[in-house]
Amino acid sequence: MDYIFYRLYRMYEKHGDPPYLSAVIHLCYSLGISLIIAFFAIKEWYDMQHKYAWFLEGLYSLCFLLVPLCLLIIYCCIRYRKKKILELKKKYQGCTRNKLISNWMIFCIPIYIAIIGILIFRKLFIA
Image 1 (cartoon, helix red, strand yellow):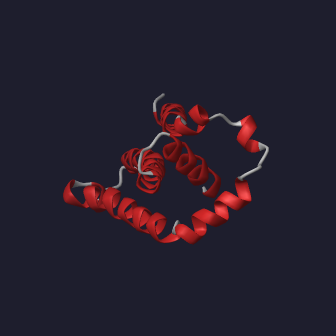
Image 2 (image 1 turned 90 degrees about the vertical axis):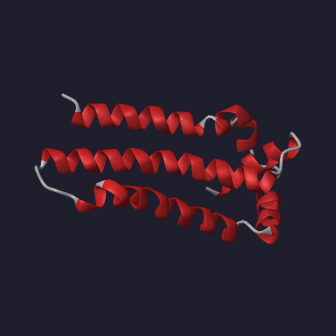
Image 3 (image 1 turned 180 degrees about the vertical axis):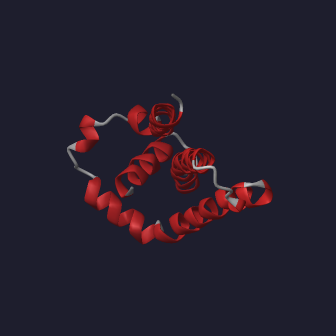
């Protein structure tokens, strides 16, 4: 996660966008997609087991999605301060992965997560 944050930070900084905010939002967006896919998988599993899950209905389902996402945003904001960003820059400045992994690959992580999640969901729950 640190390397992805570093690459996003560097990419947004290069293009003149606010790098800290943009990188945190992109990370949370990527993990939020995973959270939504997990939510639907859990809901489908409960339906297959013919069990009622009160936390997956109505307003509780919104809380089930928003609370972890808000906690993730707070975690990222606390973790990636200026000192940590400088440490990441020193750590990954001359890394060989920077040449192997292009910026567009890092930027497309949410798309990869969504496609893999949909494929797994279809394989497990849709017969």
